[in-house]
Amino acid sequence: QQQVKQSPQSLIVQKGGIPIINCAYENTAFDYFPWYQQFPGKGPALLIAIRPDVSEKKEGRFTISFNKSAKQFSLHIMDSQPGDSATYFCAASGSGGFKTIFGAGTRLFVKA
Amino acid sequence: NAGVTQTPKFQVLKTGQSMTLQCAQDMNHEYMSWYRQDPGMGLRLIHYSVGAGITDQGEVPNGYNVSRSTTEDFPLRLLSAAPSQTSVYFCASSYSLQGGGDTQYFGPGTRLTVL
Image (tube, each protein chain N blue to C red):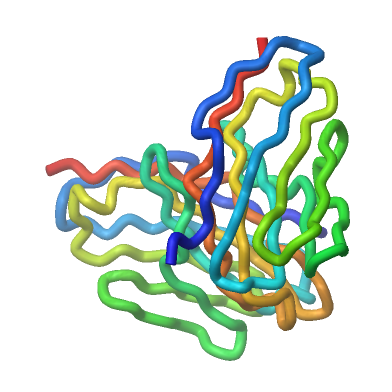
């Protein structure tokens, strides 16, 4: 019940494409869903986050879509660039002390 | 602000040796945690602290000890290193755990190899 399942494990897209990374969770007590971006040799950094009271959130070229009934959420990267090549982690946490649980990560490579 | 700092960046140990990974933050955050990152397994929580003097176990605590004597520092001790502890270790901090919705700020990581 504490797992967050992330797919795909890796993804290659052409510049300008729209990579989509999917995550699914089981614990309905989760109420905060962040995405972290990690470049090689660096620590993860928060990219964008959503709460389940909205179905979509956009920040620049990054969009989270959230489906509460299906317990799924996804990250879309519009007009992807080679500089977006990184590992992306979805995560979930909840009020009442539910600690952050991370997905396994997706390695994205954007071809120039 | 330096944010979250970790030392050392790299470390090689022999099986059975002990060592301490250092972590410090200058953001006055209450909540600090240690994760390990292994290929295909994401980030797994080892130990965390909700304030000075208060620590608790995460998902994979065996073989590790922590203490939190100050708000700023949260060292991770490996008691008797094993090859299974070869990993990249990240320290993170956030303002609080309340509501589960606070951004975690990660350090640059320590790459540990146990021979």
